[in-house]
Image (cartoon, rainbow, N blue to C red; front, side):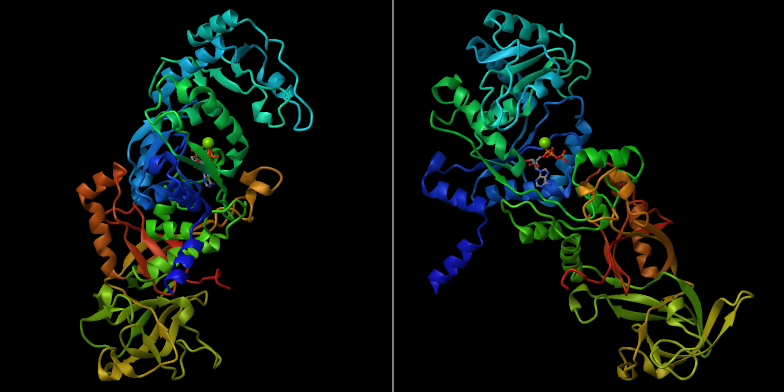
Length: 586
Ligand code: ATP
Ligand code: MG
């Protein structure tokens, strides 16, 4: 029994957790577990990054380790503090806590010194060829590359030129520093990789104009891991081919060779591990493409609710719980694949099912007049989620004039139509009375303007007569208390399943119907949402991009919605998170 339970637990470990447990059992790194999440601050986090975040932070949480945040800021051309701030906010919102914050730029001095040392040891040279020439000489996996004519430059000359590069005396693009490794190595990454390049055109967002040369990824990442004491450097599969080079650079510098740069002893080594990237249907997962959509105004911004960014998902109404549960379900493997967007929607639907109060909203309203209703109107107490007590009740205004859905009335209906139609059908108004349609009024074009009905005063829900069954229940909103809401109906951003796999321009594949806006009549109980947006303290928090709780609702029969921050004291905006229909399980 105990054994069986243990086995189940073991089976549910992902392969990285298995590696970590094995390392712990063998006492590797004295049982120390340290990970890092290393975003480049050149764009907003997307849901693909969240997969990495859940892994990096998850391992640290589970095994009493620490996960640091490290900004991989080695390319000042594309990076900015704006991105640093939003990345931090998004991680906080997801519910993760980092240990310390590091920047690759913290190590520019040390990395520069290592480069100098490399040059002095004859392991690096300054190449004056163009990037294209260097690429042409790389060879193919089966053919060796061609050595650069600058490969055997004397050490002194390399030193002099590299220092001139750093002093800003060499024009951008005119020279690079390459590691002198092996132009015939079957792993192309060993064919004298570029380790430093000149960037003088852009100041760095942290170091300003201090540097004119910047380290490349392969020369910065492993070393940064090493300086910090990372034990498990987890990344996506495309870095698997970089791993031998990652290890090679660390071997060049680590142990007794590393001039005391690591406090973790001569045997300490960070180990890189790779898992499969997240790809989701009907969207793109590349910061470059997202930036293009934002810059060209094809979406409303990074936080457009159609974007796969964390802030977009948040604005769409996704919850951290749903996003994290999605990551649990898809798991981590070594096999690249495409995840059905329906699964993401399924997880948010499951989360909101128990959390989102129900309210009535009428999307295509027509007026209903209850001709035998006397008096000023009344208050109806409705359960926030039918049958689940935990969200309590709310007050709904009821009266003689109501908005109902146009589609809920047919002037002439066959006997398969159970909703309103003259001729004796009984229909219940949600949470209130039973009515029968008696007729309608039309305008000159034949469009129905008003539906007439009578009600049964003895049929009120919650009273004895409330138990009487009808074949249909319809939604309604009382006219004098109704609010107009701008409802943004979002759909998938792209019209094709895998825009990245198609020929041609990905922008031509955008779904032209990804946003429809309707004005709906919603119940007055939503007025409190507008009030919250007239609260200046909350508004300040929102504009500071601080995390504010979102208000989720299920608009009955329509789907799950969230209050959008465009809401003001007199204008309510709701975003559709997802419809009610779940196609995923089919
Ligand atoms: P992009 O290609 O969109 O620019 P990136 O990989 O360059 O993304 P980084 O900021 O370098 O973005 O990524 C930080 C971390 O997030 C890396 O460890 C990377 O492996 C991981 N990551 C990025 N995209 C995905 C994804 N789609 N699925 C899983 N992890 C990802
Ligand atoms: Mg990257």
